[in-house]
Length: 100
Ligand SMILES: [Zn+2]
Ligand SMILES: [Zn+2]
Image (cartoon, rainbow, N blue to C red; front, side):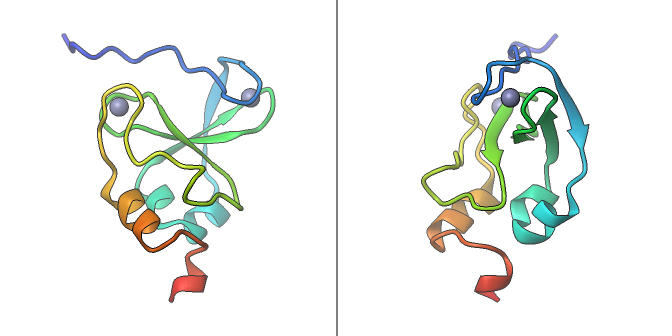
């Protein structure tokens, strides 16, 4: 058994705990780290979150105008680090196309 159970998933925005897995090609195109992770959407308010690849907790919220101060590069539950987010923060954020 895992010593790190999946915590209750709760939306930062509205407090709902109902999520479903979604596929957002626009977010995936814009942010390289979204393409590497699972995306979940709050069924109540529509906020989208990256899911921690290690423990399954909600990692950080993503939307089309996130900046480097609005994302986590470490899982709030297990401290797993997503290197793509760290390098995106190091570059100062922005959309994918702006940095090419
Ligand atoms: Zn919500
Ligand atoms: Zn985690």
